[in-house]
Length: 406
Image (cartoon, rainbow, N blue to C red):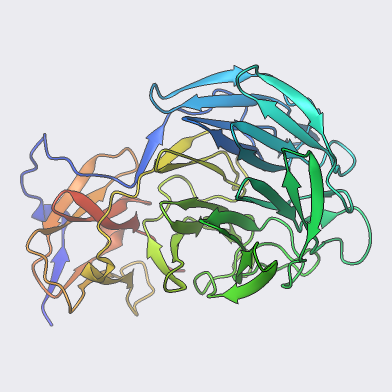
């Protein structure tokens, strides 16, 4: 098999005007104090991020709310959350209004539910969620009903709960629905695709581990069905969203190796399968918050021990032909001189496939045509956390960070 090792000396001319669609693009930072376990939602063509906390000598909590306008790439501070200082809350939006509540204040868990109206920039108290007070819930919206459940509770058992409830904003009332049948947990990921709700990963409190299971909720039959696991890695405190008929889960913490993550996976409901897509190009982290506007997703805040305010736009403008690249992974050599292999899939032979390598400032430091059946690079020749992108024509089809496995 032909192999072509990339060397820095192998650079060739780059056209200054050369451009291509990128999947992750950094946007304006949230102009506030860095933090994690925030709440987020979107209404119309605006996104919202707020609340949250950070750990220093003492536990510092927040109640502020910020509105993001993607058209101008700007943030505007809005009315503070009326429920007071809070973190790890539920949040969802229905018919132009958002609903935020539960979570933890400085000393206790809550079960409240507050409605935010962006047209008047005001908050109004709504019916409390049934069951025990809680934080770290999952929430999603199906057919104008908001679903909230699971989470860490302030009473009983292991401290986590499997109960679920549906909220009807037209009636301002909650009803009990089928309990989640998997392991009780908090800090899981939840979203809805079409008429189905989904929940997966998370932290089974007290077990010092994460999960990678994934479940589908059918509101018509009021039943849960287990689906394909999210990758091979357990994780907790991850980010997730639904976009253009697909689900996405990524980042988070893997307690097996005590490390924060930056990989992202796409869920395809039609085949009940997961495909790895471009790594999150910000710093690896947990407790990232997300929202979706007009066919694009946005990820912000979070922590890896250091708290963040950066905002990243996810634009799925890559080719769906994932078989262009069968594998991007470290070969058997685990030392610092190991190599990454970019293997073309047997079903497709692209005529315009290139490998780009960028430093963390976004500057192209290497470009190479992929002309052989396998192209290898030695990552120790490039700066730490250099980013690779495999380009077909003008679109990114696979990307990530060059990282050696220890």
